[in-house]
Structure formats: C-alpha cells, structure tokens
Image 1 (cartoon, rainbow, N blue to C red):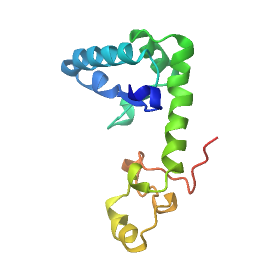
Image 2: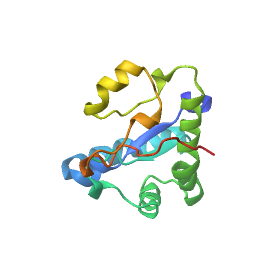
Image 3: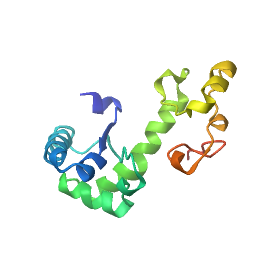
Length: 140
C-alpha cells in the first residue's frame, strides 16, 4: 500500500463542521480510510474557508479519537506527519509537487520573476489570513 512507502493522506475536517449534510459522509469515509491504513500516514487539515472553521490542537486530537486513533498516534498525525510532508515537498528537485498560494494581485510579479520564494506571498488585507506572511519556512 502507498502508506508503507511514506505517502500521507489528509483528512479535512471543516466540511463536517460547516455542513451537517456532509458530516456523515466525511466521518464515514474518514473512518474507513483510517481503518484501512491503520492510522499511519494521516494528516489532519482544516481546509477552512473561514477562521471559525479552524479548531484547536486538542479539538483535533479529540476528533481523531472518533476515528479510533489513539492519543499517541493522534499526536503524530498532528505534529510529525505534517512536518514530514513539508520536508519531503521541499526536498524535491521540482516545485511542481508543492502547492503555492499566490494572491491574484501578485500573480503578474510571480509569473515575471519565476521565483518560488515565500517572500512574494504577503498579507495584503485582513481577508487574506490564509496566505503566509513569513519570508522563509523553517522546518525542523
């Protein structure tokens, strides 16, 4: 299975919070996925459209217990697996495997310079809170 090769799978939980009709589908499919991979290689992400959809680390760890993930594995899913995904993405020779968020106002600059640095991604307005302000990403 691909999880044995180090592939991680992201479970986005904000859809279950936002839309009650999606809640059952998201929980059922996530539970079957977690059981199939034995809780290994799971990354929890919010995929939030609004800041109210983001939950704290403890809330996400409690949510992981719904999927029958132990406390120790849930900590790995929240802290270690995302770091491994980012390390792997930045260690690749090409940036085609990395998702880069660029504000539409800065798209021309980004295309012109062909620079994939995070320094081009800055926060212009309060509505752009999902765009990183940092000039560099430190991964330990």
